Amino acid sequence: MPLHIIKLCVGADSIRDMEEWIAATLAMKRAAGRKPEQVHTTRSSPKRAEEVLDGGSLYWVIKSQIAARQKIVDLRSVTDAEGIARCQIVLEPTLVQVMPRPQRPFQGWRYLADHEAPKDLSAGAGELAEMPEELRRELRDLGLL
Image (cartoon, rainbow, N blue to C red; front, side, top):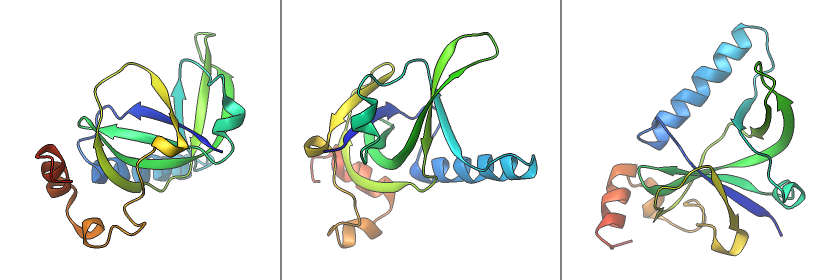
């Protein structure tokens, strides 16, 4: 059974912001002749890496709500320019919108069991998947979702 990671998305106000950032980053890498992959670097490596790599996703918290996820492709140990060990989380560049769920702020990242993870909006959400993100967020804040 896969194990997921949940992380705050700093700097993005919406899923669209994230999608635009991902597209711009990949385009810059292509233009520089580098491999166009999305990598998120963290301070520490998951201790349960094998479970995470068994189909896990990175769930993003945007504006205090779990809003989207990306499939985790790989976890790499690297050393940065200052000689500090880091972990690169390699992600599929496609964001999958999920049922919005409130999430309090936290530092770093947390594990998220598969049975606790929000369902994808495309999985039987019907009209909800077509609804603008802002409206879904407001309905969730009002307790109507």
